[in-house]
Image (cartoon, rainbow, N blue to C red; front, top):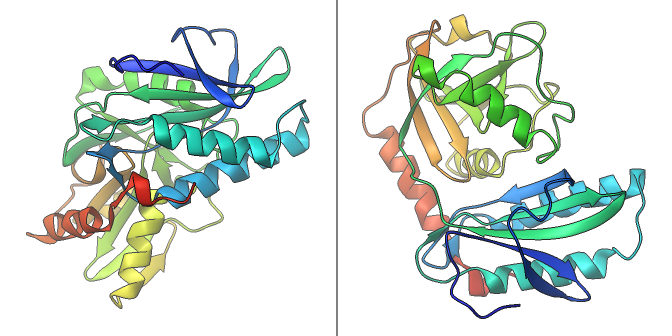
Length: 277
């Protein structure tokens, strides 16, 4: 692995037990089968073990369905340790690990990327048309398609898209989990609606349970969220409040709640050097 200073984005391929730096466009013909990314701020990250577990599970499932040569648990563990070591300990970063297929061969890839700008609020819009996801419970295969869906609505002033079930129920955002509050009850879509197992949402729900806050799983159409506080959660932004739902419900906000919860998550971040390798 090169010791040169890390620029805005650097890609590495796991090969023969180490990370080799490659061109960022080296995998233009490959397909992403699984991916995971997280925010790193001055060498700390939130719930990194959950990201590791989610990625490893997705990789195992993919390799079980489509076996490939020379990739086993030892590779995953060693790749993870090398990836954590490669992330800079100062500044804001948004690394992504990937399982790719190139000509049927599975590849492990690390992308060390500078973190994009973050916000505390977001405008969303309901997706119109067919579900763009092909594997809705796996993070990675549909990233490009979901990115296109989101880019198609930027001219309307939206920066996130709410995906709906065939029945019209809220499932998730293109790049986020969606939660909402009914008074002091935190609500989440039911588990039978196919979506990615959001690490940030799982962390928020665990904190809520620890605090004795009631958690309700309910199917809702966007119109049923009128007057409620709505959150969009992601590993990049953490918790964001939905301030506008274009052609949808009018959200509300309880003063101070967003700030308090963002602070709670901030206190749960841990140094990378304490993460299990």
